Image (cartoon, rainbow, N blue to C red; front, side, top):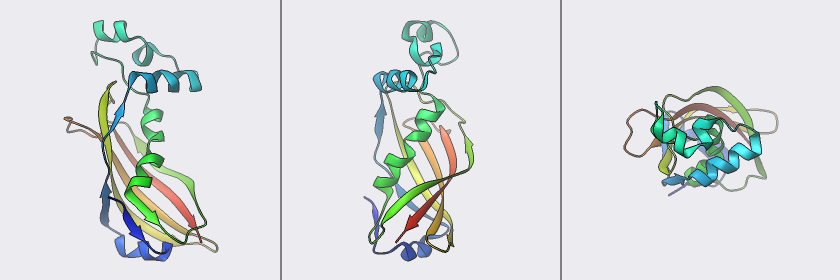
Length: 152
């Protein structure tokens, strides 16, 4: 369930707190294939199911790190809804790591924690810590510090 805030200013009360844990999403081989075609990254660990089964290290194909990262927008929609905002933009990332792979056909979800809020001349900037985790795996598959700007 999303945290619902009436204004972007209301997010300040959530600094240093976990905002949400999202629902699980299945990362299918079809998603991985589509991402490979869209980006031109057709490395066999992503696209060759039979070879990935035979050869270490994963025993199956794995999602691209950038595919995992691209899910953050989807997850944020589940995590927080800020009313009275004209638009939100992805302002960038301070840090991203991919400590563990996302295996094909696995379930992933995200944990959002608000690290900081900063006012700019025309927006409220929120810095989120986001951990993407795969079901049944203790190490996160993505750890990111993500900046989103909200314009009222």
